[in-house]
Length: 293
Ligand code: HXC
Ligand code: NAP
Image (tube, rainbow, N blue to C red; front, side, top):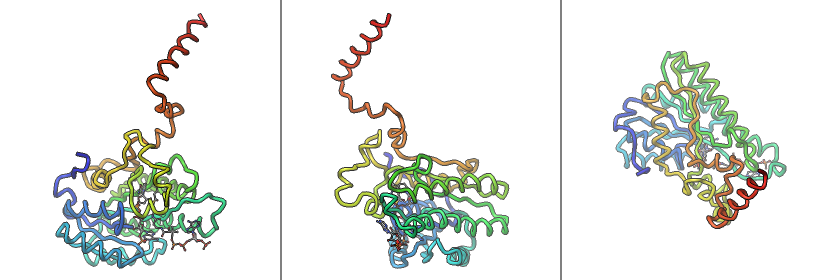
């Protein structure tokens, strides 16, 4: 059931959406759904061969044209060239999905300065580069538009062992809310999604390599005892980038099955207590109550 498309078929008809990191993983899944809803889609990342193959497969699956553009989001000139390409092909751009990211687990003290800034540059500078270039264009053209940023739940909790990513995603969240306030008057909405675990090759190879995938199974951290389905994320992204969410601005929506709250509540770990243990604990607690009277 949760794997069903949610929006009506023409929900994104007439829209052109640029998706950074659209050639793989979650970016690819969201792009495919945007196409199915009638949008033109531009996918972009550093690896042109990957993008071209994905674009071809998407075109076969959806019957719609996909533009694949090589662009390193860290480079502002490449981002402006991407925007120009998109406009040349489709006439205008209405949506930007900042999804590209770089990340890997490491104790922070093992990182070189370059390793730290590489992640910050892809995630925060990449998102600000794209938002700035596209925003300038939209404001100049007096064109309403939507920015949607993919963050994570540790954008607001922080997380050990992915510190550059946590810093960068926290920055993207601040950017989301700041631009929502500043550019709202231009008709430019800015929102974010904070996904919990949605297994992709890109993320799992770098975050759960080897035996970690088994030992640190994300399913066990989620109250719903499962990971996310790509279509669930695609449904939310399509809604937030569509005009149906026209009054939502500056919001971050978490889609994680309750994962971050599970880690936050001080007594949540008590799910490990069995009914028999509860019988015993209850007796002990009740005894304390009566002995106090
Ligand atoms: C320590 C490392 C390292 C590692 C790279 N470096 N990997 N340091 N441990 N495992 C160091 C390098 O030695 C170098 O520093 C610096 O980082 C840059 O590395 P490059 O390989 O030159 O960078 P680049 O080719 O730009 O690749 C960027 C990357 C790579 C981030 C390192 O992993 C990448 O391309 N990632 C893109 C896709 C991705 O990460 N997807 C997952 C997103 S998942 P020195 O000092 O040696 O020069 C995500 C999910 C969050 O965000 C939440 C999940 C639940
Ligand atoms: P992914 O497949 O590795 O996606 C990352 C994409 O970013 C790749 O397509 C990569 O393509 C692109 N990219 C990296 N550096 C770039 C650069 N400098 N310029 C342009 N593109 C660049 O991983 P994913 O899991 O789908 O992640 C997608 C998004 O979801 C990320 O923002 C991630 O933080 C977020 N997220 C994922 C999860 C999860 O469980 N999977 C959870 C929370 C948040 P190239 O290598 O070709 O450049």
